[in-house]
Image (cartoon, rainbow, N blue to C red):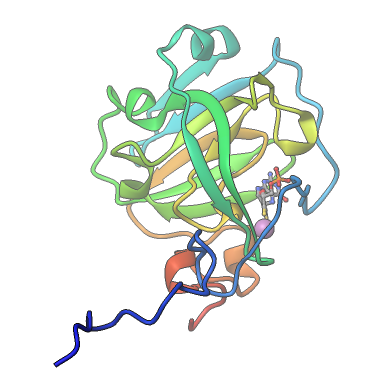
Length: 199
Ligand SMILES: Nc1nc2c(c(=O)[nH]1)N[C@H]1C(S)=C(S)[C@@H](COP(=O)(O)O)O[C@H]1N2
Ligand SMILES: [Mo]
């Protein structure tokens, strides 16, 4: 009887990195914006969280910078099929921003300067899964990539990572945002390839 390790058929042909289904790798950083780039001066910038009771929490630019920040290195996946691995950001965890926010809401609707919106379950903003980032690759976040600050929620398709983020409404009922209203998936998990409604 020969010595055969079951399942060994020589060198695997697949690439070493695993991407979500249907995605390809890109090295550059494409810009995808549904409209013009809003120019928001940090002197005027504010970030708000509004609860289902109408209670509004506010942070100025300096407030944001004064909070403890993290430097997540994450992979990002755009629904137009590019993925970029190992992107480096700096920002404040939503766990920090939401720590003192009293809410019983289950849903979040994120608003951007310029009018863009996107929705997700509140729990997807918690437990180290989301940040308000203001630096990318060791530099200030460029306006076309969402500067002064954007949401980063890398476990969902990148359209959920609202650029030029202005605030988050906490809601007891789900309210679809810009792309979700236009037929994109309500949740958008790239690993389950939830691109469009019905996927
Ligand atoms: N405010 C705002 N945020 C946005 C968008 C947008 O058009 N406006 N596009 C989304 C989409 S579809 C993607 S893929 C990413 C693109 O981010 P990037 O331009 O930094 O690559 O931003 C997301 N956030
Ligand atoms: Mo996208």
